[in-house]
Image (cartoon, rainbow, N blue to C red; front, side, top):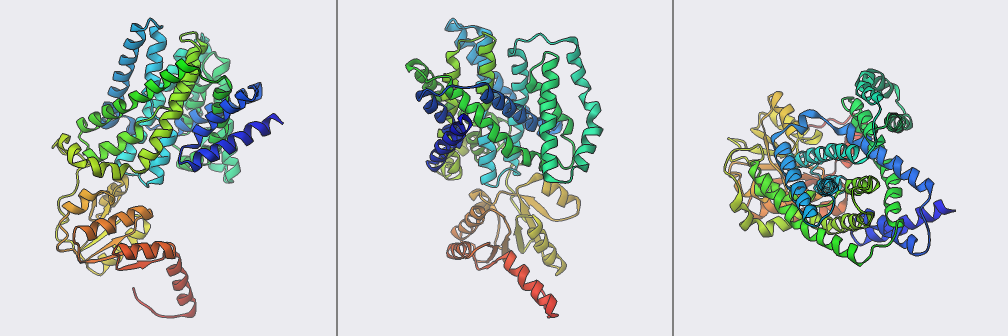
Length: 513
């Protein structure tokens, strides 16, 4: 019965939160407070489910850890300096207030962490996960997560046994773990393997006196290099989210915040703009353009779910008073509620602030810099996925002067190695279209998968006065109508065209591209 009450209340309040354009996480915390107000208490079952959620979270973090991505200049300089500054300021504040400095330093570091869940969702919804700034944000989040694990191990207060060093031997089991994942062809088997390894890592670490979260992370790192790791990570993502609902409910069930806790939480929310400004300045110092720095800073301008986890560990170790649990819970929920709408309109917000913000850009070269020339190209293909590459090859085979454009550095690197003429550029960036010399260009093909990105590109091209042809893809009549109104000359529905070509082939019709 209690399980139904927990899950049902979390769903209903989470649904209301989502309909109000807030992250469901805000609703889960509110659901915990509501249940507590009605006299519902936490239970061992809920605590156990919450622990599983945290272990799955750390396991999925481990799956994404790649040393090469963490050692890039932007990641180390921006992520490292931000952690150092916020932690140092927090330590000084706690020292002046007479609180325990060690607990304040750990809490300060945890407040420097950004919400992985919200940032990834925002970037994914905007189709920016694979862009240059999307990769920078993701790498900084992973760096923060790694630091969080170290803090959890320190704050846990346990005395590890000598057997704890055996955890360092986990990488030796990598061939076996990789083999198990390879032979697990069925989706449910991959999911079960991931859960089993996460729980096994947590149990192993716990038995040697180390935080189970660290064991789950090491298990994830052990699998990180497997070619199917993205598939496994995607499958675990939703399951991990379900278990983490128990963690957020548990926070709310500990009790309603008092007046002082609410004031402290509001004070922490008031500090968020300063964190955003710090991120923006550090990104600019790393050489990124103002637009990229602004969008990346907004994505990182939140408090992390890890702050809740580390605060719980600090309180258990008696490094801070229990009241901080409710304060940090409110601050995290409030930061997500504020950040969600801001990130939804990040591009529009930058357009308003652009005249002021671009004054702070450095003039040094960086891969984020916009292209200034496309040579003698007469055709431009925007979005070098499978559809874009097919269009590029079709034009190239007809000896047309064609250039491809994409915002994914990995895609560009691969295509350049194959001898393709491609350049970096974000189609949603107005500066791209205002700066590119398009006088020679007869036609532009937009093969971007995101509808908003295609609309933005068509709008910007016509706004700057481009008179050539614009062709694009669409997936339903509504998209076709809107793209046509914005100025696209022709639209093709890929699935409809595939059906037409199949019919022509089976009937033996002869046709040419």
